[in-house]
Image 1 (cartoon, one colour):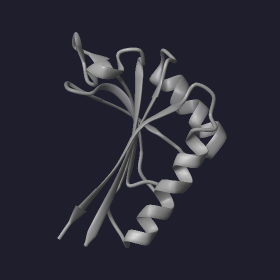
Image 2 (cartoon, one colour):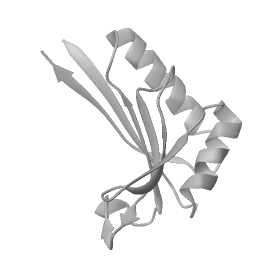
Image 3 (cartoon, one colour):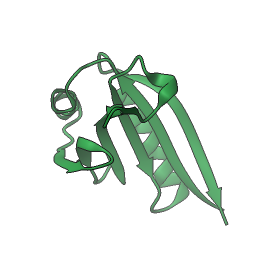
Length: 116
């Protein structure tokens, strides 16, 4: 059984760049700024600790990405989906523990998807 790990965090900060820089200072994860029509301006990290970690606005193009989290202006998505299950679990747990220690970041959701 292959497992994929996903975490959703949020922040009330107002700038994805400032929040990504805060994460960089605390965890030494280098982000790249990107932009898309759907996501808007966002910051993305991919590397040793996460297959994908994005810091993005929750409200883009006059729509909420996560309606139930309208109190939060920024959403942080963490995904680990490649490699051995125990490695993915370990990376996810490590970043979860580190991210929730950063001021203004709160964990909203955790999910594990199992595939054949």
